[in-house]
Length: 354
Image (cartoon, rainbow, N blue to C red; front, top):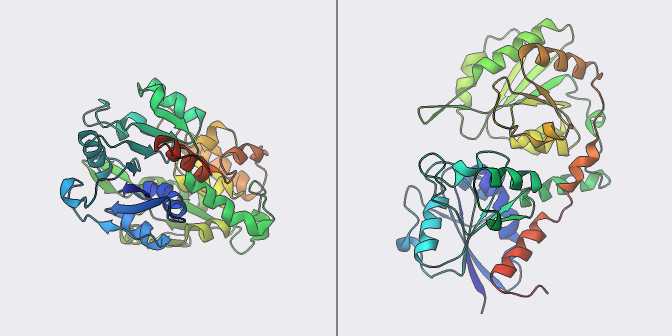
């Protein structure tokens, strides 16, 4: 009798983390899979060819469940997400729950209602590495709930490099010359009173620096899925440099055709490091810890203020930045993250690995 697994996702990062696991479990006859999604996850599942039920504002509860599952696997979306609703359902019906963490940020907040009360803790949390595990323990998440598997989404980075001699840490930026002086900015919105607003101030600062440089440089802005790209079009339509604003687009192709990737601490910056690009992380507001793990590993470049950003951008254009040890990224993209997740799922369900 196949084991039934329900997946739930709301945010883009959660959908990306769950997709490789869903696709793998749908192969063979050991499992039946049902996927529930809402908000930005729907678009990402559509792009990945994943069949899902769009809850479209409905609560995840007994009314949408046709058959009691053996396991519920979730992302780790922010706010009162369907993941949190599913955790409540799992607790009320004695169904084990697994959350797959997708990034190095807001650990306790993802599983809390008010503050960091951790009232929405699942039975298990699969995380990226020992660094995130240590941080979670410091935020009072029980150690026995945390299992290091890696993020399954990272396996797709390796796939994009297989055509490039299977060398995930090689620098391919010299192979794409069409946009060698075109900086790709990965936008992340500001949150004010629960609403997402464009961070035009940071981009303004970047444009001012670019204008001061004598080289012919243009800027491409890739908007976050939660942002309205038309607001950026309006904000920068009169910029004194060439500015291109993109909404929905192929992120991998954008990364592969740009040499310099700039942003704050987005997952896309991590992906760009994995693809061998020069990555600059501009974080003038200090946080408890750096959400972009490649800064801590010394394989991306962090700017803490406008002067540091100016220096790093100039050096990146002139290709005079200090070299980095890209081999450190290999541990995250060994191609086995999905396999490790499925192995742990089978342990939870008492299924022997074949």
